[in-house]
Image (cartoon, rainbow, N blue to C red; front, side, top):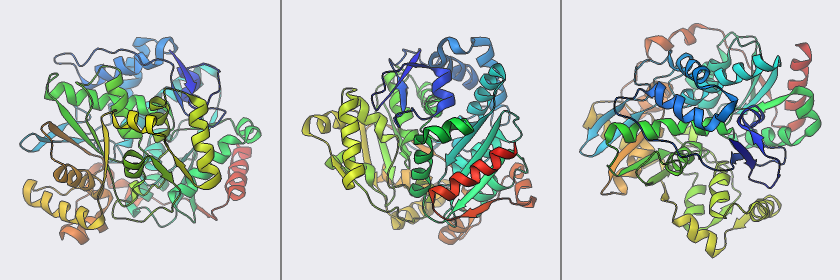
Length: 460
């Protein structure tokens, strides 16, 4: 199984190289040279068995099947539900895919726990140590901190926008007590943090000196791991049933995982609704074929406050016929002028992918949180409510599967203010509140982040 960059570097790399590198040297995103055909869920197959098969297909000969099975078992034995990502019915032909049963109560745990196991396996085999760098709009950082805490082969640096994530989200990142987890709070928004991460990856000498790797959704392994629960949902609801997945969307990684599952033959077709908040880049891209630079807007659903979704690049790569020069020119134009536009042929191909996008504002989000409480008796996080509102406003003949991406307790202030009820924190998470927080506040400057990382790495 080989991988290539979306930006044109002709070097083919293994799954191991793509996983440990994160971002390609030319600034592109790794994607499979060919998508593997994978058998759909077998009757009675467990989530861990399915994950072993799917991840094994993407790993190729870099990880033996028996070893992959062990890594998967270790990754998911800390989840609070034996199904890992269970379904719950909330109405006729309307289901929620619960992705918040991991250690930090968010869907990022599903991928991050297995990534940490795979990293540890590869690095132990190599006898090497890496520096992992990620930017987070709230959940990725906590999931990375929990997954990698205490691993001797990895130092993790997490960049988050100061004051723009919930206190619970922050504590999952900053309260591990692990010496290999380093939190940097930047004065800016998520896109600022993401831009600094990309700049550091583009700095070849820095990247080489600190042995840099990334676990944001730019890392292909994240996408591969997330494709598993789409396949599991299809199997649970019936291989022949037509499903529409409704995905709360920030960086477009989770939505892309559904596209990947479909490409691998794991779904009965693809009907995907990408639900965004007021940060409507994906809507403009899907409906107008335009990408325009704009500041991120702060909303009730902060993990989705992303103005430039990175994983849109992988989808554009496919609809451009994998013509990397065309894709590079598109993003170069955006980098120079802050705007880029698809031609009619590519726009037509994009409209034929089965992916649609819709924007839900804060008022609609709040109304949906109240409706869900009345209809189901459950408190839902604002990100889940964005997806539920999008599904409600855009009816379909298919069965709706709405991704519940985070536990309501991760956003207690917002949930309480809107619904009048306080979501209880699961007992398994209460220990985080009693621990001391550790993070360093920095200006939104590339140099400041670069020096902070170099200083810490030199100590090791």
